Image (cartoon, rainbow, N blue to C red):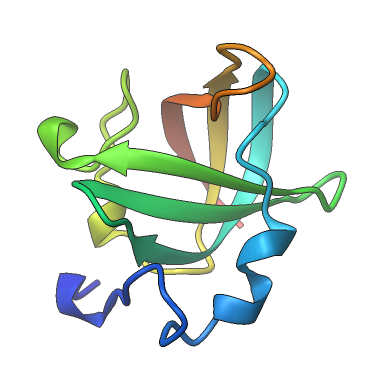
Length: 110
């Protein structure tokens, strides 16, 4: 994955029309997901857009530069992951108003 190929979270992103389909408030739990695309945030974050393989739900979670673009307890740097990959992700809900916390991820063979 080439970090420079990731576009910003703005109207110039090729998937911009789909951004609103992905929810930042993810119920706490573990999910089997596919990475659909990424977008650089306005601060030091990278948005990861996932689809739950079992339910079809769409989630938007962030990873941050201070953690090398890895989930809080994770070892996978998502700025290096190509789209289409499958993962098991673990999410913690802070509350019903703040985006969910992306705790962990592990690769899943397709």
